[in-house]
Length: 141
Image 1 (cartoon, rainbow, N blue to C red):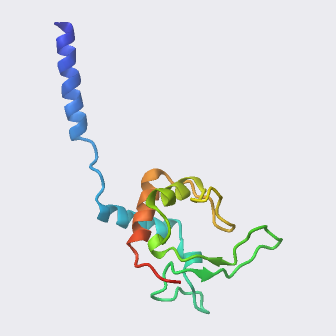
Image 2: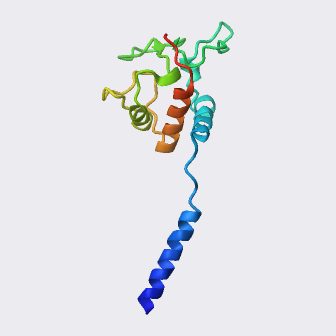
Image 3: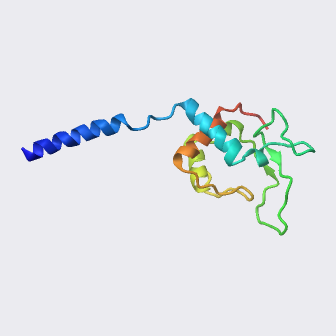
């Protein structure tokens, strides 16, 4: 009898725990979180958005790729001279992009070229960033 009561307690706990589990975020929630991360935390636009002579982002060109306006003081092998277009994440499968943001390793098993940092985002944040960037209208450049 003692075990039967314990089984009921475990079943009740499981039902209650599932009732209080946070719901899976909607796609709109993921995109909103990704926008916050991309624009307010990770600051992808600092490199991936072209800026005018005053240093202000050029309207309508967000995340469309841009020449880098800085160089290392000493030579850095493989240092990129421009940041690629990331609007729409053309050419990236979702899981490869998530892996890149979680590990710093791209779909070709290579790290990003400097100065791109090797981010170590958690899965939820990486998925949110990918959802946001994929929600942007892709550009051909």
